[in-house]
Length: 448
Ligand SMILES: Cc1ncc(COP(=O)(O)O)c(C=O)c1O
Image (tube, rainbow, N blue to C red; front, side, top):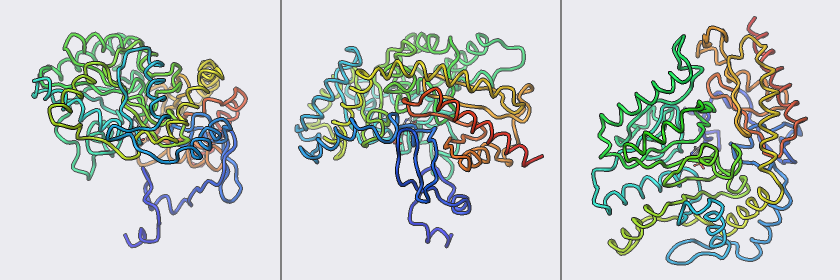
């Protein structure tokens, strides 16, 4: 305990004592997809910071947009019926880009706040719409939605709850979709998806669909292991939700802004959510910003509630910050005008092709890839789907070895997650995968 007193930062998602033993990584500067630490060592950041620096670390148009915005209006708030010109323009551009599905935008400063806000909005809408029993929220095992009390309650990752007295009792937990790990021997992918959907329906029916406000789900789970859904999953889930009268909130904090291809993650699967939460890639990480895009029903309910109570009793100081808004507008321009979405399709192909080359390693059970999001699942026996014993911490050691080799990846248990900047070239992908291969091989050789 006393040790902690000497550490000036409480790091997110970090085991402090391990971190201190393994020496800190303090980054001084970035250039393209590369970052350099204070000792001058260079790394390829194949996680884009924390799944967010989608344009890398030196995009001149983004930096110019921020600089210009700072000299014009460096601070303002989107509250009390006032906002900045940049924020107003951004809202319009987001609504247009989403193709008319949504009617309003609520701005936050982070993804957690966006999710927390939408939970409160759902509850407010249930009360305002005369359906006060509708307070439960359907959420999936392995899901991640942020760290505030409500958002963390949605998580399907045990370490988000342990010791925090969470989850709060408003969730209906349903299975994730992870065919490789969760199917039983002999089960086809279609049969597996059917089983997941049957369990999902049963759990919702047990809770009573009339008590459910929404399902909150990531189109592709990121922090839960980069779980690319089986083909039939989202169409079947959309039908189930429609059948039960449950709206979908698509949490696209990672999947938005081109990360899995289209501008919005739900578009990749043809989903029709009632609301969407975004953050991270909305500014490519160049400024903190989150947002909730609200469909007409929720927009109307919020307006009714504000009228009923005399005010919308919810808001934030930094949400919709003018500089963040200007940077987000520059990011939208980059995606449209520089053809970055086309580059994501190329990135998907090069990531998939290169990572599939790792399948010759006996410890690589599966590689998953969608857009610029990918994972390598490490298993003690890949063919038999036999996992490593957790205490061997194989994933953590591979990530540490990769760092020694100048590559930043994220270990999610024994899943190695990759989320390189969308500007990553095919030759950079080859370099990333070559360093990852060395890291895996060296880690296993150490064991032998
Ligand atoms: C899907 C999802 N939702 C919400 C969040 C929370 O975002 P933030 O860290 O900006 O609060 C994250 C963060 O990784 C996320 O992956």
